[in-house]
Image (cartoon, rainbow, N blue to C red):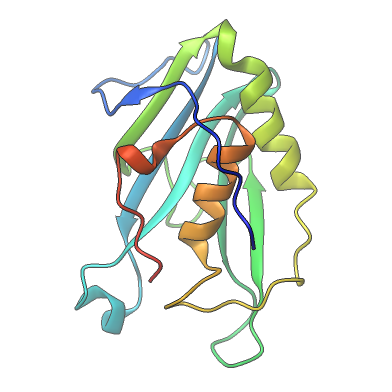
Length: 156
């Protein structure tokens, strides 16, 4: 999976949470420890996006399809249920763009890209990628954001 090499807007992590009722858009890169005890020994993190576009808030997250094994693929989910599952807005904030109406087109592109991601196409590799962090970096590029300056993505 080739990632776009774009430089984008945004700023280093800030504290605070945009209002869910805001008429502006935002993209927040979030991280949390991985659920795999083996990867936890390496201090691996899982990264994902919490975004608010023109049609509401979503979690954009990638991960393996199906049960553990050699036949897993990288899949992406765009979830409007913000507190369903382990990826929530309460996770550690790494990077933020917005809140501003000036990032709405970029955020909407991220959501559209997540909805049209070709699930089942890329063989998932938890160590070398593509994996969930590859997906997070990819969607940052789709939105024109460059979060790699704020977080050293670990492909674990």
